[in-house]
Image 1 (tube, helix red, strand yellow):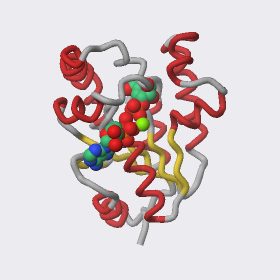
Image 2 (cartoon, helix red, strand yellow; image 1 turned 45 degrees about the vertical axis):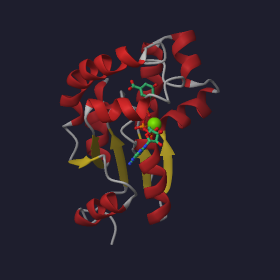
Image 3 (cartoon, protein in one colour; image 1 turned 180 degrees about the vertical axis):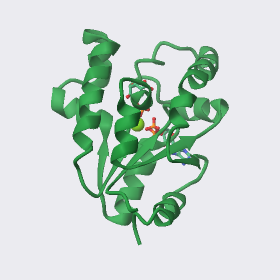
Image 4 (cartoon, helix red, strand yellow; image 1 turned 135 degrees about the horizontal axis):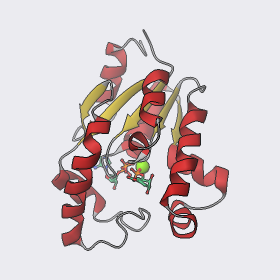
Length: 174
Ligand SMILES: Nc1ncnc2c1ncn2[C@@H]1O[C@H](COP(=O)(O)OP(=O)(O)O)[C@@H](O)[C@H]1O
Ligand SMILES: O=C(O)C1=C[C@@H](OP(=O)(O)O)[C@@H](O)[C@H](O)C1
Ligand SMILES: [Mg+2]
């Protein structure tokens, strides 16, 4: 019942990219950050994709990128916060691998996002006050999708050990 791919999901700022990198390093698997993958393939930064082509176009690229990961092996994939919420991406990820939702409160997300707004087009124009309200609304809308993940993890965890334990319990690694 082991898995060849692990998908990290959750709201912007929950730590998918950070955890993914350190987890992959710890277990010597490959690491793909879906946003970086999309930027490299298209040759355009995420903010520029949104600004020039719009969100719907980004979602097409994202969905294609998700589909491409489903044949990769021994890889940790940090998805973007919206990936599970559009098209049939969540179904595809659940079929292809172990999906883990990194759950964090709206306040916790706000604290982690305050200094990282510029590269995230959905929040780049929000003031610190608007940010919490936006997160609360969007999280309520998105959480039903995130909760379709096979595992929900507490994203306040520091370092990869929590995730290593999850992978062991699913016989994905020894
Ligand atoms: N477990 C953690 N504890 C504390 N801060 C974290 C943790 N994981 C990530 N961060 C910080 O939160 C911010 C967002 O992390 P990031 O990995 O980019 O999130 P995501 O990819 O889910 O949007 C970064 O500044 C990062 O350093
Ligand atoms: O939540 C979203 O819709 C998005 C999250 C971002 O990734 P992170 O979750 O890594 O910030 C990135 O894919 C894009 O800015 C859109
Ligand atoms: Mg990220």
